[in-house]
Image 1: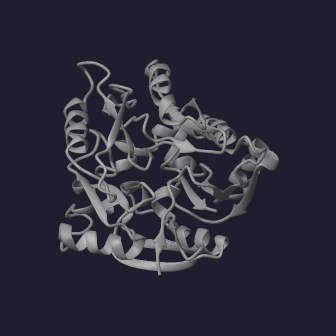
Image 2: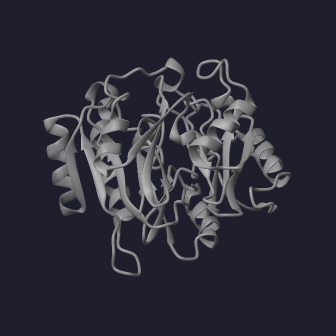
Image 3: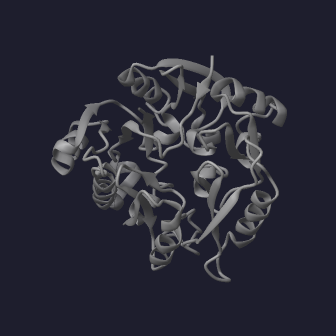
Length: 335
């Protein structure tokens, strides 16, 4: 039996996400983060050329969050009550794969991103999302998050050693053992390993901030915006690695580069892991997070990679205060 994990350009049955709810986590950014959620989700759900939009499923942890999500999203979304720690559904939710058209939900072991953020409800959200879809749950003892894996839909996955081989996640697993497990779970036959993620990334190097497949055989990565880009060397090392490898089909990768947001800081002056790579794909749009004036150039550079979609930028500075952006807060369900 063949496992198929479609690329994110393939038709999707729904996009699952969690509404910002915890005032103690978000503080003054709670309300503006909700505004950013509503805008990027509306763009993502917009109907494509066939007139069909992308169904949205929003989980709300409190009465207040549920009422706010319903008020802002209206008929665009189905809002369900479910407890969770925070909004990062890419990591706390499942990774969906198909087995002869039967949907399976892969659930990794989860330890709060290496023990840094242990929030009640994050360990159970994945099962709720899986049950909503009717998928069979497939479990793994590998500690991993969805944001650590980027699939091309044709047997290739990209990940980072900083995350999957980190002592705070999988101290007893070898690189080869992880490759075998990823093949078992997803049917991939080629793992492309990058070394490390962005400076300031609390997830220890999630790949959805680094490299994305625009299509099988075509990858997108970032170039430094200027000499002050804190991840300049990391961007260069990633491009060098991508240029030296082939995918599961034996193809040399076509590489498209877009400018990074450069140095983006938190209120405390620390480097934030801002990335234009954290986009989501809907029927009409590829919605890219924007942080500053670099977004205009990034949209222009990314557009040729998506001839069947319009690339648009949507503000993400307030969502970023929580540690991620659009791809991080969503979990897509293949059709």
